[in-house]
Image (cartoon, rainbow, N blue to C red):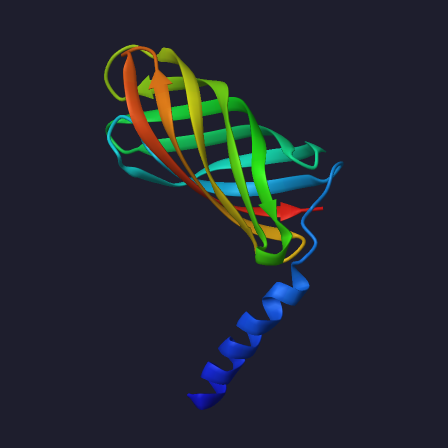
Length: 164
């Protein structure tokens, strides 16, 4: 047990020295996200994949794709384009604080009834912690507007990214 505690402490102390260089302009990232459903608050495990590009050191452009299926309720396929501006990047703390938003479409196929297409707007912000130069964990909280039905709701997104 002591060896395990010692290994965790050494890893925690070593991480800041490994991650002092944040990704820079021209870097791509692939990520996976876990999101809350803005209409119900339910968590949609593994709901999305994204491809990001750091157009500038402080500007990340992102495309998302997700599929969520809730048994006996509906299947939703979503696509979106987002832009996030890093208001603050703190290399010594391996942190960045993005704000931004995006637009998207949800293709909803309910178990009963006709399929619909929802237009989605998102505006929010959060924090991204760089575990190393190539990996980060992020938390975003924002306001989402979905059409059909018209719904304003808070949405939470947690993700892991691999920068290359």
